[in-house]
Structures are given as C-alpha cells and as structure tokens.
Length: 190
Length: 190
Image (cartoon, rainbow over all chains, first blue to last red; front, top):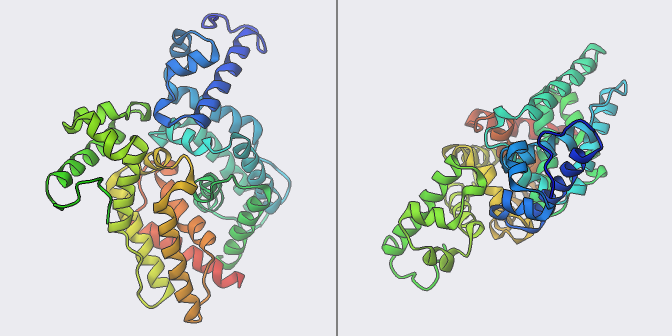
C-alpha cells in the first residue's frame, strides 16, 4: 500500500507505477465483473492501493475510466497526417480499432461509465478538434471530405459498436471497410 | 410477449404494476446516478418493492435492463413493411430514434449494463433477424439493399451513439439523414 497524492515528481516513478496498477485493476474488473461491481473499494483492493488515494487522485470510477480512455485514445491513436484523406482515415481507423481490440469488450462499457454527460468529456472534444483539423487539411488539398459528424457516425460509432453488435472487436480489415464505405458515400454525395 | 416468472395470469394486474414501477425506478436511477450507483437495493427502495422480488424475477441489474430494452425496442419499434426499402428504413430509423429519445441519455448506458456479452442478447438477435427479413423483402422486389452489417453500422450505431457524441438524442430528421446516407452509399457501391 502506498500513497502518491503529494508525490508526483518522478514520471515513471512511484506515482506512475501506482497509476499503471490502478488502470490494470480497472480493466480487469471491467472485463470480469458486472458493471455495478466496478467500484472504488474493489479497484483499491485489486490494485493494492488505499481507497483514499483513489478518491483523492481520480474522484470516482468515472474519473478513473476517463483517465484510462484519455491515455489510450490520446497516446495510442494520434491523428495521422499522411498527405491523403484516405491514408489519414485508414491509419486513424486502424489505430482506433487497435486501441479498442486489446481492451476486449470493455471499451463500450468504459465509455458508458466515463461519459454520462458527453459534453463534459475533454477527451472527446480534444479528439473531435483534431479530427476536424484532419478533415480541413483534406479540404485544403482539394479533396472531397466528409463532415465531422459523417466521420464520427461512419467510422467511430461502428468501431465502438462492433463488440456490442457482433461479440468481438473490429479488426484492421473491418476498419478499412468502414473507410471505404465512407469515401464511396462522400464521392457519390458531393 | 414477456416472461414474468410463475405469475402470468393477470396482465395489467399486480405483476404488471410491479414491473412498471420497477422499470420506472431503473430509468430514473440511470438518468440521475452514476452507473455504479444503479443497484438492486436502490431500485428496490425507489420502487417500493422487496429486493428478493427483484432478484427472483430479474436476477440482477443486467436482467432488469434487458427487460426494459426488450419491451421498448420490441413494442415501440416493430419492423415496418411499407413496400419500399426507403420507406421501411425511414420508419424503422425514426421509430428507433423515438424509442431512444424519451429515455434521454440512458440508452447507451443501459446497453452497456444489459449486454456485457452481445451474443447472449436475445433481443438483439430477434431484432437482427427481423431486420434481415426486411432487407430480404427489398432484395426480392429487386431493390439494391444494404447488408445487415451495413444497416446496423450505418443507422443503429449512430443512433445509439448520438447522445454520447453530441450530448442530445437523435431526432427524426437526423434518423432520415442516416437513411439517405446509407442509400446513397448502397446506390453507389452496387
């Protein structure tokens, strides 16, 4: 048991180790338990960390899940800039599928825990702003580009939902299929 | 249409009243509380029903939510048969949006609670079978029809996700936009 509230000075040090242990505990609980069983006391027990530390650092389960999602989506899936819209979309979609796949079936459940009010999600808005910039670059190159809504609804929503609909995460091939579909629609509708 | 344990004799009687009170309590809790706070004891307290009754009849929160989703999706959104694919898709999409909208922001969270394992969802499979029949009718009339996957990913996933992405449920106009998009894609890709 340790306490990392006041000691945040060494990245990769004790604070980072606690964060990694806590994140792993949340992911294991999300995978193994009913959602109602994913609670701060259970996370604390599994991670071997004081409950007080979790409450102080993350507030509640939603804060913890937000932290995990922000790290995964932010670090593992940066917005690409390949020089073509198709290249950008394929890389973004495949990376996004790769972020979801290793987390198994928990992403949709984590999203539900993390964002009871979507407008409060800094992660989502940051990501949306970056995706809009990607679409603006395509438009500036003279490419026919989807709107941000068409992109979110044509690629992100199905990737999130694949697990729920089909019982398994989307793979890279399916991510590319979604890009193909969106670009066929954009080409035909402009 | 439903299975209410041993007491099925009086529709609209005591059993149905309890079910309605319990469903209302779950929906209120989903709207007001963090997901981790939606528990059988809290539902029992709010509905004024013994916890033992809830455990016996629904098993757990997931069972309760499955019952609600099955009723809403099953009764309020039957699969239409208008004679054209566009007519069927529009009616199905608008009805689906109407089922989601009155439930406010809870559907996505309810879905997360209801279906940790998508393959176990009888509701989903029943619905998928009905939608496939709708697409088969279109194909039999000689219309270009999407696959079931294209339909689920092009319309259902965005309708589920609208609240999460945009902080408000999709309305009928947006449901029709999704149908337009899907049909433009189908027309261009076949």
